[in-house]
Image (cartoon, rainbow, N blue to C red; front, side, top):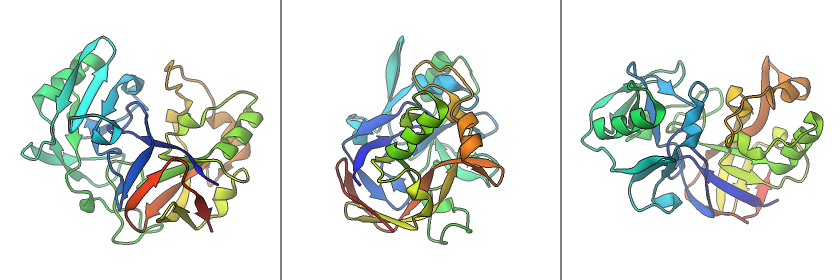
Amino acid sequence: MHVTALNLHPVKSTAIRRVDSAYVGLAGLRGDREWMIVDDAGDMVSARELNQLFTIVADTPQTGGTADLRLSAEGHEPIEISFPYAGRLAPARLFTRPHTQVRFAGPHADAWLARVLGRDDLHLVWCEDPSQRSLNPEFSRPEDHAVFQDGYPVTLASTTSASLLSQWAGNDLAVQRFRANVVIDGDEAFAEDHWTSVRIGDVPFRVAKAVDRCVMTTIDPVSLHRSKEPIATLAKHRKWDGKTWFAIHLIPDAEGEIHVGDEVVAQ
């Protein structure tokens, strides 16, 4: 098996940025979901409720940008933002998890979001210290951490599994809908359900658990059209414990560079 694609999402829920290589840190791929958008209450705002976020393109040095963060959207002037080391420090929350301390990028970034998204209650924040966000202890170790990923540092999806899912659905369900960091050409569909560890190139990972899927996967990332797929088909073939499942969560056991084309060895 080999890596066929590597994806970064510099700001949570914004457009996928494909890269040829990525540096794996212990909290995830460098440049992936280190920023997110919150509302006035400090709660995460994602494409689940604001699918226009998919139209924002975020770039960092890891995706070929020259600024710490550059945001662009069709019909709007782009904005460049530096890491807000001196920005306001305040709590923010992902889902119902305990609050995480974040740095606010400030009014310049917030005004840009208001122009693009039509809401004046949105704020861009940055995760300065991933070590404060612990993971579910059932599937991780005390030393494991993440930034603004939904649950764990890295996600991996298989094109072989996506192809079988498309066959079941009777139409093409692109693997991009699942917003995985690492995409591979699996040997057998859903073989990843049974893996406990993965080595990508020279970097070892533990498999934390399978990924339970949400309604974000039902939004076409280009047209922004919502449908019942892939959740409807997953519910017929990949439902247990009251949830639908596709792809796996990984936790890095070491740091290092991974590349498109790297060999993937699973156990």
